[in-house]
Image 1: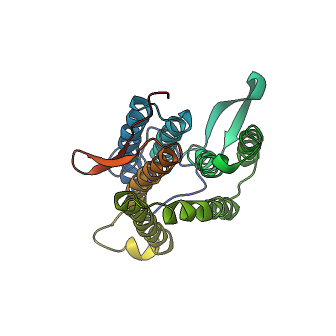
Image 2: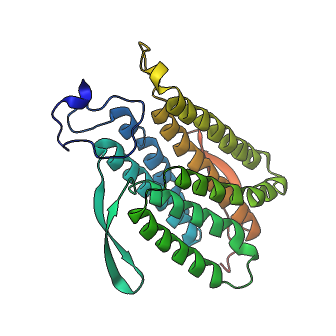
Image 3: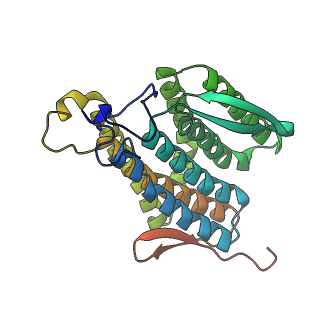
Length: 271
């Protein structure tokens, strides 16, 4: 079996595995397709980051694109090694904690990213500017510490789903108040990639035993990674458009290479 062959990283110690045999194509990469499928997310996030920096969007969007890159890299490390990892996380006042982690290379950044989405969505109407970022920062730090010590498994998925659900009402409000058809199309692409990705994830997770007997493995989890890369890009682009509209920056949807949508703004000279 491929799982039994010699590998660069040693025995699998992860508490989770997906429907892809380990170390089939390389002794350096445990799940090859689940690893390289994160590359589109990195490329798309880089496109978004360059656009945010070049047009001087608020720093929150640069951080958002960088968080997508960090999440994708963490996912690549996890799927390439399928090992528990140790890393050092610096928390407030330069206090350093060494944490034993279970899949935190991608799970903790997933939660941090959702907290950032929550901030971007709700902060424009929040009267106390320092309260929300302080609370979200402390919440993210406490979650990282707790997750390093406790295996949440189903609890993590329910917690992540709850954070996603909390973002839906505000996102829908932005959508119904958006008149530009191109911007609305981006929002629809966001929903479509999310639903299609969820189907791929569920099929890979629930029907792995059946899929393992097929001649061809459709690599549902790898497809999930690729679709989530586009999903995050569409979400970020739509939010950048909505924020530019709030700031009266005259946003327009343009397309890079004729396909990738991005937001073109024109700030007033005073800004």
